[in-house]
Length: 483
View 1: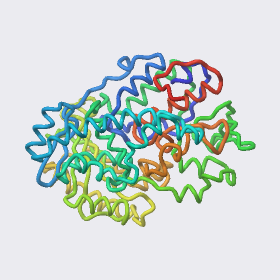
View 2 (view 1 turned 30 degrees about the vertical axis):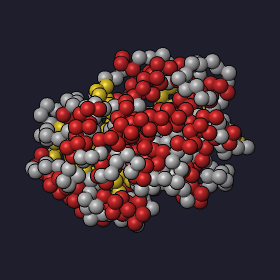
View 3 (view 1 turned 180 degrees about the horizontal axis):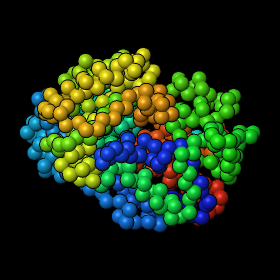
View 4 (view 1 turned 135 degrees about the vertical axis):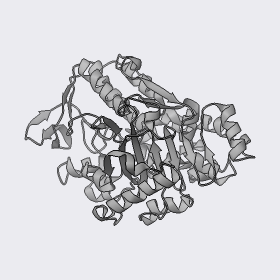
């Protein structure tokens, strides 16, 4: 969108029959499901990207702000976080008495951290000098280096379950709240400060809207066109060779494939050193997800978003990230978007999305054997804990994603949320937008800086577009002033 708006000739090669990748849609017999993301946070970044592409987002997308944002369901207590301060404090008084003072302290302290960190997330880190920029030096004392997310939240809240209510966002990073860097306390802050949105038609509509803007600006979009490998000479990317043997040369190449997969499969052998196949495999990766997409001939009385916590949540998280086994008790997330959005299913029906965090494919779980049993466990949990008592009688469409499904979609280890966001894989230490190992090659997506999650992925695209524009001395206006 941005490059074409600035006058570049852009060609896009997509292996699937529609754009979007992990943010595409699946449509089956009148039911529509988002493949991946279901929360839109930091909507202002998306607004800015459309604006910088010469478009008004409201002409392309209808966005609904969710209040409350979601429901968090423990075995004995429930919380429905909202951006409305008084309503939030009243709920905390009722569910977690004695913690209300911590909320205002959380919002004040994390606003300061966000304001300091946000410029750091917008940089490109093409050089080590940028890592120690004045913005980073200013932010560094507020990064809680050496502290975990759950530890930082202990500064604000006493009750363990209340702390967990502000940590489940670490799943966006595919990390345990006990390992996730404390600086990511800005994630729950971002939700409480700016709200959570749903796109009518599903979040995949964002990808479709972007493709419309691209076509309006003259981008050639080639669907059903897989790329075989990058064309490289003397560590310089000259373009891409397609599976059909056709070679497309370009001045600059932007790579949006899964990072681990791309380094091992799209770069010819013996070229990379820092990101050789062995080093790629030794990186830290996020968890994976087991998912059910259910088309139901009934609408259940559940909120748009609900997260169900296992009673032994810490044990559940340890099983996923450390032990790499399937837990006895599950934590899971249900999106019942049809209560907000009637476009996702026929009248009186619903499109339900169920996500269960599970170990990635570095585990020894054989999903061809486990798939049916685990599916039945998830259905049982939905019946018992989500009170969907007659669920089996109402399923008309069912699609199952396992970690193996994700791996078959060219995702390294089936790690749905890409490279983990440990301190050694953030900022300068994450693969860079102007790729450090190959010339004329730029990275976008969850495996590069700033990281996974829709807002940061959109920012990665803006960073890359701004770098390319600068490289070719093309003037541009951008809300990202860090490059």
